[in-house]
Amino acid sequence: MPNSHKLPWWRTNVNYQIYLRSFKDANGDGIGDLQGLLEKIDYLATLGIQALWLTPFYPSPMKDFGYDVADFKMVDPLFGDLSTLEQLVKKAHHNGLKLITDLILNHTSEAHPWFVDSRKDRKNPKRDWYIWADPKADGTPPNNWLSVFGGSAWEWDQPSGQYYLHTFLKEQPDLNWRNPEVKEAMLEVMRFWIDLGVDGFRLGCAHHLLKDPQLQDNPPAKPSHPRKDIGPYDMQQHLHDKGHPDLHPLFRELRHFLDNYRPEFPRLGFGELHGCSWEEWVSYYGQNDDELHMPINFNLMNTPWKATAVREVVERVESILPDWAWPNYALGSHDDPRLVTRVGEAQGRIAAVLLLTLRGTPTIYYGEEIGMTDMEIPHEREQDTWGLRMPGLGRDGARTPMQWSPRGNANFSPADPEKYWLPVNPNHHEVNVASQLIRTESMLTLYRRLLFLRANTKALQVGSYQGLDFAPDDCYFYLRAHRSERFLVALNFADQVRECPLPEQFNQGLILVSTHEREEKNLAGNLVLEKNEGLVVKLQ
Ligand code: BGC
Image (cartoon, rainbow, N blue to C red; front, side, top):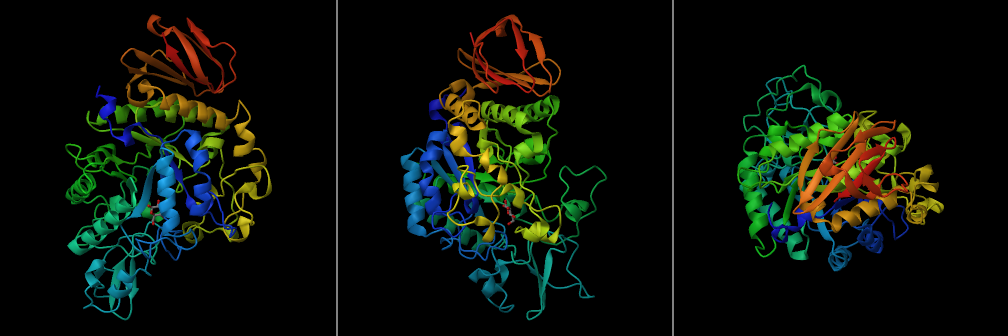
């Protein structure tokens, strides 16, 4: 067991993802902003998390709500200005919170001056900063690559007589990372934010950065079912437009930069990669801790919510990671249906216990701590371009405003956000921070208890993990241990009571957290778990 004093911050912290548009609106325009977030730093600090991952705040035409960046070194006036961001960094640090910003490496907005120049004419010095290609002899796109958001990944540019590549919207042209000037320009962007004080980057779409330079066609998908159905994009094997082997040397360069730009305080590279095999996922940690610090692990989100399946994922992570690599887990994001919508409220509580007691850095999605659910957004009110282009795939439901109180607009904004962005979920009368803060049995109280316990317990932060085979059916038990400290986590995934005689070394302890209101705090001999109950027990 490594000495925890020497561990980097990102191993012991809990991340909290803030979808900025939806967190807190201070200027009354119905859209969340940096000033609003500043006002909520106290809430976040007392919640007990230690790092914020902030979704994009850069100037943007907002075709993909900020993931289409028109200037990487500025703040969109919709969200505030650079000085508010500086204040945010200071206030976050003052409250013991690290700040991870979202950096979209794969593409820019078509409105970015780099692309404006690139599309001017074929001789423009910025032409090669993006991926341009001639049509086939019959005028059709250079190959069969598809956009994640539907249709061909190529857009015809009439004036210059070539196609350009866009893995996402046509308004989001892909950068050409094989051009060293592009790499240097993006490192310059990172230097800018590091100088301003940010502690790390969520490297968006990292999986897509390099493509086959020969632009070979992708083969059709293998008959095995895709894990997550995202429409026609799933009908291909993304052999040539994603996960290219050249990503490894590129990630090594990025890692070298993050470690060495300010060697006294290396910055975090937290990379977004979807739909890879376990072997591919782990490969992005590098050969010797020399690529991404942590490739984000979304696997629990795509796993059936069953004790055996969840255990299998955790133990796959445990067995596949080299000793020096650190696990991480997330149960929600702005791109996926919300946790409680997927598993229900009772199991949402089990999920909280799981996420905050596993070995590995957890990421909480905003509102998860109060059990926010997806809201059904009628098609005519949808904002997300993905949903507008491909009905059923919209992500708005998981992006509705944070529910701060039972009152008007959930105290998210003085304006009605529905007029400018998305409606407040009507369940905010029950599901909100203010009401849950004062209720001992609320989801928020459960999260706060778990976060407090994790922050103060070495065994939960850095201790070893061991799955326990004596758990009854539909239950998942594991041990977290550090030196003499031992914690038993017992999770009942069933909607029925489960009873279990405990082996000797596990049968004495103190129940520190339960998803249920429990009178008996001592564990002695037999363990009876109520339906959907989860426990954290300090063993004697
Ligand atoms: C973000 C998505 C976005 C995609 C394309 C990802 O990093 O998580 O929300 O749609 O980039 O821009």
